[in-house]
Image (cartoon, rainbow, N blue to C red; front, side, top):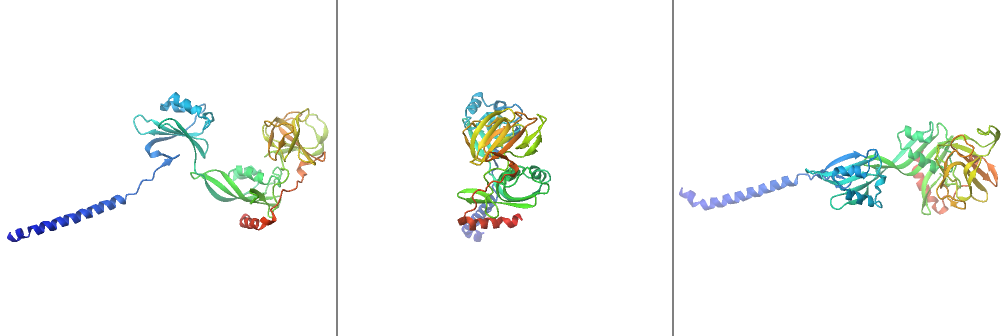
Amino acid sequence: MKIITRNLPLLIVILIIFSCNNAQKTKQIVSEKIDSIPKLKENLKFGIPVNDYIFNKKIVKQNQNISDILLPYGISNKNIFSIALADSIFNIRKIRTGNKYFTFQKNDSAKTLDYLVYQINKIKYVIFDFTDSVEIKLGEKKVITKRRKITGTITSSLWNAFVNTDEDPMLANDLSEIYAWSIDFFGIQKGDRFTIIYDELMVDSEKVGTGTIYAALFTNAGKDFYAFRFLQDSVYTYFDENGNSLRKTFLKAPLKYSRISSRFTNSRYHPVLKIYRPHHGVDYAAPKGTPVHTIGDGRVIKKGWDHGGGNFIKIKHNSVYTTTYMHLYKFANSIKVGDFVTQGQLIGYVGSTGLATGPHLDFRVYKNGHAINPLKMEAPPAEPVKKENIDVFNKVKDKYINELK
């Protein structure tokens, strides 16, 4: 016992040191465990932390307005009225049946509505913030571009070629505009082919549209038509493989996606008059209200009513060419005699005014005062790639041409 008593202070010191070391190790272990716990990723929708709320997705019902949507959540008429006054930010009359909206309610007994988000389209949305005073903010989802190459074959129409391959049919519009001056899309044939390199627009892993077309190859009646997007004089234009611009003085046709119901002829049986007489134009059958565009820059020299042609507009493009657009349902707003119009500008809408059995556009072209067949008219090309730009253009062309082939 004496030995133990004599060594007692030493034992106490050893026990204290041992306890301290264990405490440090324990702290280190606890610290390591805490640091190793992964942080939860914040779940945001429209920039709002959705985990903090009761979140619901809903659809605007038929005849439902902003009051019908907000009143059940306890939003006052005063606040709804302030939203209506903020039409410079978002006009609540533009809320459409079938569009989505999202609610963010507090996770408490009152389930107070803090935010309502209305989705204008797949990209744009508007946030109604009720957390303090009413605030309205416009937002856009992040759009991701994905480079794609697609090919297709015509079986009936350009539009159906995209629909049948589950591609965005709006590409048909883009393609027809690129080739508007070189390919008559009313005359494309079964078996014609196309290849396109373009940007597809994605939001939340969903296709929302199409972006830039960089290059295209369209084979029409066995002939290849290339298109390469190239920047010249600060403007992007499409050129063929030889550096010639695809843009010409005139569009091939003044409206899109229709059929030709009557061609240029010196002897046609008139469906209303029941007699044979010349038809010095091309009739494009199209639904009433289809937009009609001028095929080239020019000045409106006549506009009005003709007994046979109904509502019509006549445009003088230069000292050689004049065009006439007949049987219009109505004219574009503010178009008047003396106005200068630019290529592709809206001038009216397809109708059946005058001597017509159904809605169509009677389109006529005059060269030096004499009617010519619009389908056989050749227009001079616009400016080609300049000599100083040809090397850069060839690099752009070579980048895509093998891939298109």
